[in-house]
Structures are given as C-alpha cells and as structure tokens.
Length: 176
Image 1: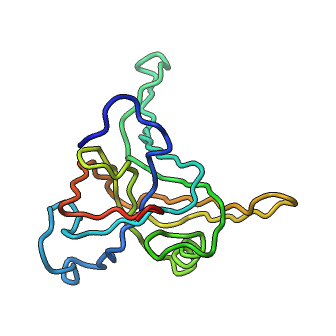
Image 2 (image 1 turned 180 degrees about the vertical axis):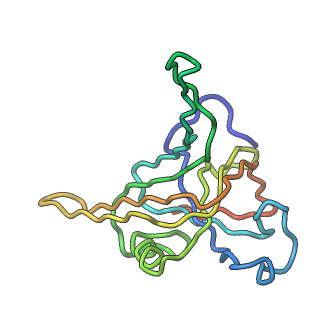
C-alpha cells in the first residue's frame, strides 16, 4: 500500500540493482521486460548505513539572447542531467543483501555502470531510476569520529519514473 501523508526522510534511500546492464540489446537478459529497462524479478539493494541521500535533476539551458530582444535573456531547453548521492557510515560486516562502502569502491574502481533508484521501496510509491556511474567516492576517518563515506552517482541517459511493484521486484535493506 502506498505511503500516505508526509514522508519521513528516513524512508527514502538509494538502491543499486543487481541486474547487470547489457552493452547492447543483443546481450540483454532474456525473459520479460517492462519496456523501460526494468527486468522482471529485479532485485534492488540499499546503499547501506546511509545517513543522508540526495536526488538532483537539472535542465541545461542554451542562451538564445539576441540584440533583437533588447538584451533580455532568452533560453532554449537543452539536455537533462541527474545524479544521486549518499553519505553514510563505514561498516564492513554487513549482509550480502545490501551495498556497503567496500562494494561501492569495487564498482567505482571497475568503472561499472549500475542501475540506481531513489525510492521508499514501498508498494505503490514512486521510484526514479536509471543507469549511472560512480563519479566520486570519498571515505573519511577523523579523530574520535565514526568513519564515513560519500558517493556520487552521475546519470547516464534517461531517468525513468515508475511505481514500486513488489510482485516483480525485490528491495533488500538492512532489515531483509
């Protein structure tokens, strides 16, 4: 059942799909697809130990100002860009159902394109998802502090809006 009322920010997370993205349509996974790069029986794994997250979308603009309009700025819409970030605490002994900072390091180092989602993972709620690369990964260990990480995923291509349907997908988190 979809979430009602105001949503507590603790409910929203960044998830990484365990479905490997194909290089070409010829190598796409077999089976049912939903026509939007979502594969049936997909499993999404939470970026674990996150303390905050962000979804950001931007519209690039093309300056079309001319002398004909007396210098008043005119713009044309350009491309859409999007990203998701997460910050959290480093923990090495997590279950295999979530993505730890160690997993993020491996994805970043291998320059792996991943599918990520911004969602509550609750049936009927909205999710935004698409392909992305980790473009920044940082770990911090200050004196007398909990070790932490931050990760930035830059979108590569279209971002899709969908409704969570747990009959076709699984969302794993620390409670799974």
